[in-house]
Image (cartoon, rainbow, N blue to C red; front, side, top):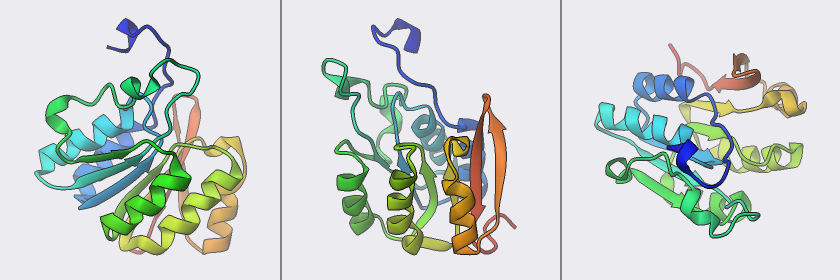
Length: 179
């Protein structure tokens, strides 16, 4: 599918981990930032379909260097799996407050957008207070800076790091979520 597109889109986050987490945790609400082609979105939605429940809220910002970039957001998500999906394409700073006002407690949060410390910290400040007590947070590309390390130190939470495709993913389980 991606090879047939006239543009090159980035790769996805650890979609295997996300699929597993959704199947195992059976979250009612998943929030993700950074959709791009939709590797992660498709994995989450396929797992929700298998579970028979859940809703995915996504924030993305189109690749501004492309003509009509909105057409490429989530291109890997099959049309039949979009019923459980709300996609906002105004970027995290505009989209996350809207999503959080609508979605209720978050069971799984996947961060894969602005890789700067400031972008990650902004999202964490908004999302963490709305995490369910058994929720899980996944940060992609934690090797880019020290945000994940500092987030763990300041929150008192324990996290794990996994390798995926030559990059690293950080995961934080709120109390008891992976038991």
